[in-house]
Every structure is written in structure tokens, then in C-alpha cells.
Amino acid sequence: MSAELKQPVSGLDVAHVRAQFPILSREVNGKPLVYLDSAASAQKPEAVIEAVADVWRHSYANVHRGLHTLANEATEAFEASRGKMARFLGADHADQIVFTRGATEAINLVADSFGATLGEGDEIILSQMEHHSNIVPWHFLRERKGVVLKWAPVTDDGALDMDAFNALVTERTKLVAITHMSNVMGTISPIETIVQKAHAVGAAVLVDGSQGAVHMPVDVKALGCDFYVVTGHKLYGPNGAGALYAAGDWLDRLRPYQGGGEMIAEVREDGVVYADVPHKFEAGTPVIAEVIGLGAALDWMCGLDRIALMEHERQLMDRFEAGLAEFDGATIYGRTQDKGAITSFSLEGAHPHDLAQLMDKYGVAVRAGHHCAHPLMQRFGVPGTLRASFAAYNTESDVDAALEALRKAKSFLI
Image (cartoon, rainbow, N blue to C red):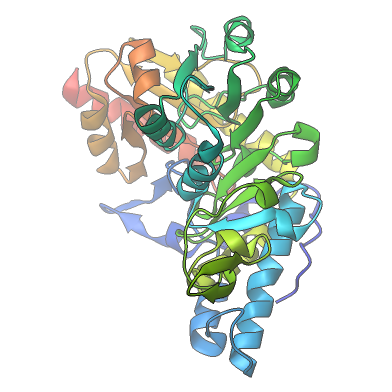
């Protein structure tokens, strides 16, 4: 497998993209599958499926520790994926990338390792639109160390209230943990501005890129953040593999997150010498085939025209939201300009779960619930919403089929 990311092809041939996803040829409940739940987990192109299968079939072995041919092949492909992730995110070098099981583990790693430097009264700023994965680990520090959590509100249209955020930043602020793009509303946070404000008081910034890295090109150096996390299964890759980027010498400064094999240089009865970064944070046998498959997913994504992809996804979202405007009692949550391709909405008089189940009868997969974002649901006073999220493989026909399924579902309930 090549260590180089593919050069993008100008424009986006959606028919060609769709043909690479085997699952899109199936039917659900006798109807063609319309998959609008990519914000939860994206489907996988044939290149990723084959990359993972090829490891199992031909070159599986444990990485970094063996001297035989299979171990060397697996290690080379595994480390090639690290290089691909570094280039995908715009990092200076591959040693700034730690492989994790996903964004959740990456955030927990920072919460444990960076959190060890915090004490009672130190402050962490979050926003009301964070995913639970970027909330609960910080609550651990609140419970165990007396760290204070402060909450930046969102406006009625779903934007981060920057005046309120700026007022929260003080000399006691030690970390800002913020989403790059809301998994509920598609809102894109002004990361560069947030970083400048936080760094002015000596605070670090962690960015949850679980959605952002999927829907827009990322340059972590331009963002200026200290930490950036991604999860592979949303990047058209396998589940169980993700990554943490850490700027500068953060990985050298922080303590290891877990102990075990691989993360050590030497173990004695009276002490331990840790391995060099990034391996000091990668205890135990990693998910080898999945990380190699993630590298294939990055190759696949970088073979697309990312700007054309952004425009395509936005056009689909605009078409869907225009269709929603024709429904009496429809409310869309998150109406900021230039948001990512996610629409969260409700219909007055119908529970989101009921609508989602009825839409599924017509082959349309959308999400319903709180989307692991309880504080945001509380902010808008709703128990949950429906969510349609758009990806490279979606089409205008998908949008029209979803709207028609919603009309039929509404007719049963209202």
C-alpha cells in the first residue's frame, strides 16, 4: 500500500462515488436504501473493505515487535497510516499522531494526561453543543479533582455566542474543549478566534474534529489548536480506529494514559522507562487491520475534490431544508450560514422516534433522539430531534425520497 495520499480529481462524479459503496445497492423493507445517517457512522467504500480484508487474508501479524516478514509488512502499513493521518490533518510530522480507538478515547487520553496537571478551581470551558464524548471526561475531572466546568451558550440560530465565550475566559482557564462542527446542527466553530483568546491566557485548546474533519479540509497548524481528535468510522473508515493530534511538545510533556506492552522502552522491578512518542501513548496491541483500513479511507477521501464535495453536500442539505419549509410545524435547529451538511429538525405533533421508524419502512435511514447532546437538547427545550446528515454518496434523489417518506410518515401520525 502506498504511503502517499492520492491527488484529488477536480469535480465530483457522484455516480462514480456511489458505485464504490456495495451497501448502497441493497434494499431495506423492499425499497432502495437511502442512507442519511452518516453523522453517526459513514458507509465504507470498496477500497476500505478490501484493505482490511487484505490484511486478514495476506499480511496480518502484530506490529512493531516482530522481525519476520509478516510483522514487517504489517508494521510498514500501520506506520504508513500514521503518516497519512499527519498529512490529512496538516501536522508537521507523523510523531504528532497517536492512534486511538476513536475520538472518545482520544479525548479521554487528554482528559487523563493533561488533566493530571490540573487542580481544584482550575477551569475548563465547554460549549452547549458538545457531544457527550467531549463532556463526560471533563466531568470526571470535576468529580475527582474539583475542576470547574464553564459553559459557553449557543444562540437561537445555533451559533456559538462569542461574546459570552470571551467573558468566560479568565486567568483560571486551563483548557477549552470545543467541537469543530456540531454533530446536531452542523454549526462550525470559529476555532482560530477561540485559540487566540485561550492562548492569550495560557490555556490549551482541544478540538473535537469528529464531524469537522469529514466535511471540510483541516489544517491543524492554521487552526493553532493544541489537540485535535478524529474518529475513523465517520471518515469512511473502519470503526475502532481514530487518532489524536498533539501540537508542539505536548506528547513529551504529558504522562502516559495507559500502561502495558509497546508503550515502554524498558521495564525493571524498580522502575519503568517509557517509549518515545507517540508510542508511549499506545499501550498494548492496537487495532492493526482497522488502522491500515483507516489509511485506505484517507487515501480515498483525498482522491476526492474536497471543495467540490463540500459544495455537493451543502446543496443536498439546502434542498432538504427547502423541502422541510413546506411542512406545517417543522422546526430546524441550527440555521447558521456556512454550516456543515447536517439538518436537525422536528415536526410539531409527532415524536422523532415515531417518524424515524416510519421513514425506515420506506428505506430511509435518519437518526432520531438526543444525538449524545443532552445539554443542547435542554437548551432548545426538546427531548430529541430527527437528524439527516449528508455524505459524498448521497444524491438529490435521496433527498426527495426522504422528504416523501417524511410526508407519508407524518400522514400516519398527524
